[in-house]
Image 1 (cartoon, rainbow, N blue to C red):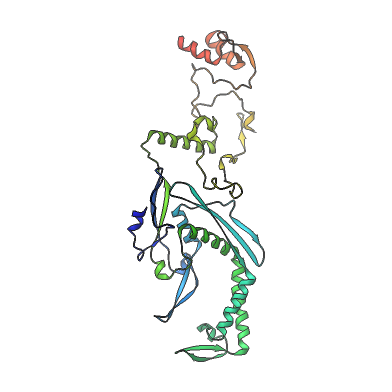
Image 2 (image 1 turned 135 degrees about the vertical axis):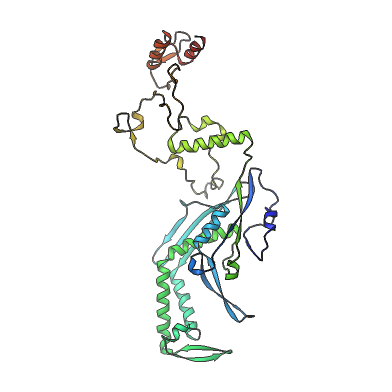
Length: 381
C-alpha cells in the first residue's frame, strides 16, 4: 500500500488515506487504489458552496466547497465502505430540529472491519439566528450587486473599495426578506442535509477527507485506498470453499436440499462488518437468508398450497435447478426421514423400513430390505 500511494504526488492528487504507512496486509487480502474524479462545478451536483476565504495576497475571496452526497457515495464505494441502513436514519425530527445517525464500516489491513458511527443534528432556530446575524452585518456594508437595485442606500469608500450601505429604513426589510428565503430552503432540505452531514463525518473519519476544498483542489483526482478479500485462487482448498459459498448463496435464494452445516466449515457465512462490535453497540446484521422471497407455492395439481403439502419422501425431480439429480430407474430410493412410520423389518439386518422402501425392495429384490441392505444386494447382483 505504501508503494502504491508513494507514486502519487500530493500536489497533483488528493490522496485519501488515514495512515501514511501500512507495514503489512493480511495474506488473504490485497491493497488496491482507485481514482475518483469530482466536478468542481457547483451545478454538477458533486459539490456545494460553503462560504469563502479571503486571500490577502491576491486580495480576492476564494470560494470554498464541500463534497455533496453523489461524490461522497462514489468515494465510499471506491473505498469499500459499507452502510448499515437498518441502524442509519433520522433519530429525531420535528419542524425545527432533525438528528440523523449514519453507521458505516471500512475494512482494515488485517481483514477485520472498523465500524464508524456519526450523528449530524440541525437546529433551525440556531441557524435562523446565525443567518440573521450574517445579513445584519451585510446590511452595514456588504450587499450584492443585485441588492443595490432593490434597496435604497448610498456608496461609501472603505479601504480603497466602494461599499454600498443600505438606508436605515431598508435594513430590516433586507434582513427579513433574506432570512425568510434561506429558512425556506433549510426547512425543505433539512433531512437531506443532516443525512449528508452524518455520512460525510463517517467517510471523513475513515479516509481523512477535509470539510472544505477550493476549486483548484477539486480539479485534482481523489486517490482512494481499499483492502479487498483476495485469496490464492490456485489453491484447491480455496477454490472448493468459494464454490461451496456460491452454492450456499444460491440455496439461500432458491432453497437448499441439505442444511448448511452439511457442507462443512467452509459453508459458514462470511463475517459481516458489524459482527465484531460489543453486543451493546452492535447494529443488528441484516440477514437476507431468512427472508421469504416468494411465500406462494404451487402444488402438483396447479392449485395454490404450502410447501408442507408436498410428499415428504418424494425425491427431487430430474433436472431441477440447484437440486440433487433424481435416482435412475435401477437406483434405490433416498432414505426416508425418521418421522416416516415403519411397516416392516429388513430381512437381512432387522431394521425397520417404511411402506415406500418396502414396496420398492419387494419389486426389486423380492424381499423386504432397508436402504443400506439394498445397496449391498444391488452390488452383489
